[in-house]
Image (cartoon, rainbow, N blue to C red; front, side):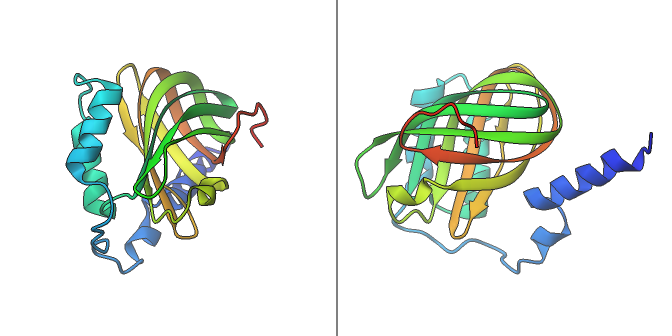
Length: 195
């Protein structure tokens, strides 16, 4: 077996996720200040009321995202389940909160493929940037994800489509190891179709 193929796949996945040289060439040193979004304290309080006060690393993850992206103008809190054996699926449901609209129920699902094995059940908080109306989120968000957490881990990754940026924060139980490519599709109603 050619040992360079897994390394090449990992390199491409990391580039797509924004961890490689491509992210350094964007020319942005800091996000523009956003004064109409949620504050760090509002998000930390919402996270602690949803995840529980004992969740280690949650405040640090939120502070890291705020330092990179600024203030989100919407967020989702919910739960999801995922499983993979090379190919995988993810299903979730939650509530979307925004500064400009009433809260609504929201669902997400999506397939993935890659070097990825295991399963997880997670509580999720997704910080959302540049959302102009709730209906804008009902699209597919392509992305790459590297997951290497065991019981009790906190993980963050980024998804982007056009001007919308999502930063999912996951805490969960289970065992998941690998790197995958896929997408998440958000819908206003529940569906079993991940595509």
